Image (cartoon, rainbow, N blue to C red):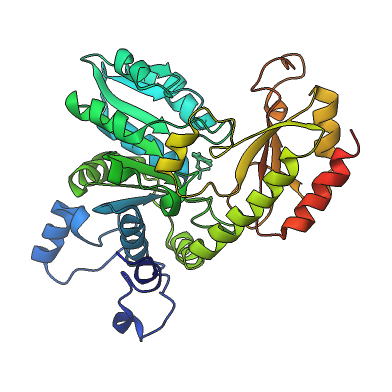
Length: 386
Ligand SMILES: *Cc1c(COP(=O)(O)O)cnc(C)c1O
């Protein structure tokens, strides 16, 4: 489907709301029925229509149609956060005794889901590096019900072979799910590679303005209907219509934001690669990525997220550099208009910090919509302090 059509028209039934160009925020909790017969039908199958806004709502429906089309999926469910869009489907599809194979180092709360939450319900997880298909193949057994991917992940940017994993999964009757937040549907299309469920933190690029927390999962209607009718309605992590509207607004400019961010990131990365105080830059398209060819085959571009390691990095150097930034903000999240930085050491107690641990010395940078020169000048003055 044409990207411009999806973002500008799909799902927008303007004749139903005074031909307004901007869609309405249908701020209602419930919907009225005129006959018991209609009411009974709606109660019997909430997936078919509007009954109560913990399930569906017309503003939410516009968003679902667009997000499904962007992923090339049959349908989409939206959630009040990205982590809900991961947790709810996983809870819906697994039961006690099932096993999961998950890539190492996914998003922090995804790790907690698999390591701490699911074991309470008798579901166990094997973590594998995932950059080599044989590791995944060796980790599965007859109890494995889900292979969970995050390609690339958002700190070290490891990639997995999506087509290869989906083939292994299909041959063994195992579902596959990916966190595609890093690429967004514009830069990677996991469903085309045979992945069953695609989750994203819509808080990031899709919303794009650092003013809403939201999540989405896309896939086959049959699978999403199953998730919706039980865990989605039971856990009650629906997106509010107001936030769906903010997401619709954000989506209008997704292509132009991502293009600008990617171009700026290329310039900032070239600057950092040449800087004598920078040891290396990590991102999927980096010349030092051992899976560069795979990354380039699966992904169109990289967006604005990458990590750096300072030369002879220690805690003092990392902290001096980060504390010295004047315009790039130190904060969690990414995908908005503003450039951000997050040193891995901020999540590690000083006593546990190990300068020889590759992951401890990472500094993640997110390039926003500022001009490249503005970002580079800020990095330059902070690097000059170490
Ligand atoms: C932020 C993020 C999430 C979680 O999304 P929330 O909207 O914060 O709940 C999941 N995966 C990745 C890769 C993220 O960056």
